[in-house]
Length: 92
Image 1: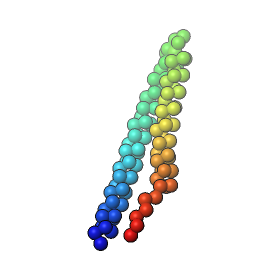
Image 2 (image 1 turned 180 degrees about the vertical axis):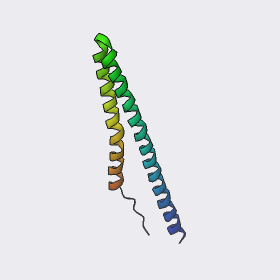
Image 3 (image 1 turned 45 degrees about the vertical axis):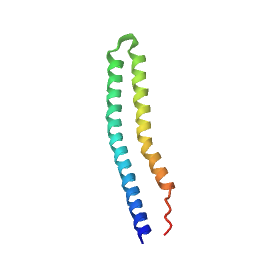
Image 4 (image 1 turned 120 degrees about the horizontal axis):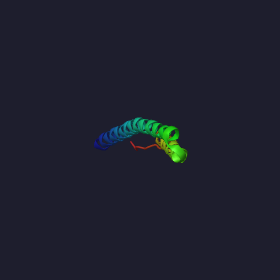
């Protein structure tokens, strides 16, 4: 009986850990979206007002913002894929 109670507590703890990780990823996605928007704005500024070297600086900002956005948005999909494929077995 005690073993079954401990296993239920472990599963509840694991579910809480998973939900905490998903919350952190959701929060990071919001910050990543804001960061990408800022990077695109800075890149646009360099493109419009950067002079001769503005285009090369702008391309760096655009690529950095796009790659960062892909990484942050892809992290949640990767975490969901791992969560769907991993099963914690409890022997009751």
